[in-house]
Image (cartoon, rainbow, N blue to C red; front, side, top):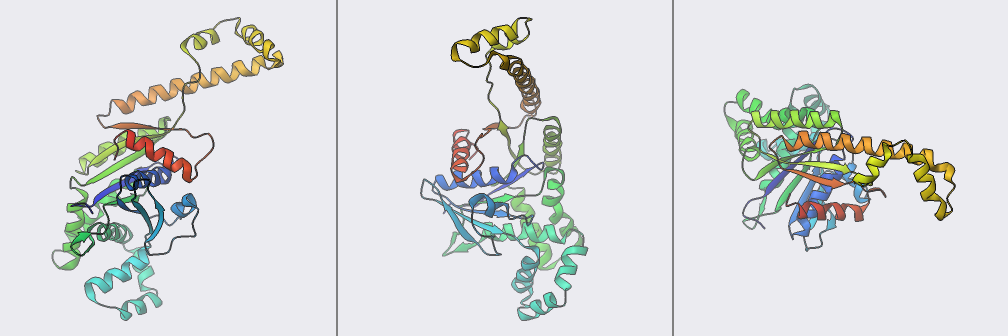
Length: 320
């Protein structure tokens, strides 16, 4: 195991493929021979669906092995179970804590009390990252599939608020320890986006907010990047009056009905417009003074093989 466990927090606007990228990041680390914990905090069981395994319980399970001999373990962090574990760990309530759960006190606390859920979720990730056996860290890296970009800074900074409220005791001690970990050089917050206006703007806003809060920004991971299918010469031809006839003439030797030419030209215009949008949004990200890495659009969808393919691009880009 490494001298210090690395924490990778993965956030992104809904629909950008945040969970897929987090899973690929975990595999990329395992491919380097590392023992990795991939955890989710939103209760969607997205990890189980990606790896085609049964729904994850509140316990760590191995779900994949890396090509380099490492392992990926997964955990769905449940705030109610985390609270019972916390009460037992710091206050030794044991069976009494289970009675609180039976009477609904645990559910009340995690639903009503501001920030309690987020404290418990980050606290469990902290516990996993700092857990040792025989004097060595259990995990080389922890990858967290975190909440969306719009609330990631508050999610990660909630322990600072707790530390301000609890002046002494185990609550204050743990809150301070979690904040030390999140602000350390062993942690990184990666932001997943696609090359569309709203996700890119939310990503740029997220980078600014994270930096203002003193939280370490890792990479902006641009997902679903489509390749340019038309050469510069082909794009120029699309702007000419005789383009439909030129396409029809090109189709004739192959036996394809020349009547398809107008639809193909229309599709070409749509592709070029999409490429121009991608390029313009990419320029905005490139100007944000943060490392940017592109992940390809996979036309056949995402399965375990695709995750390993994405993991390879993350390693090639030195994201991990």
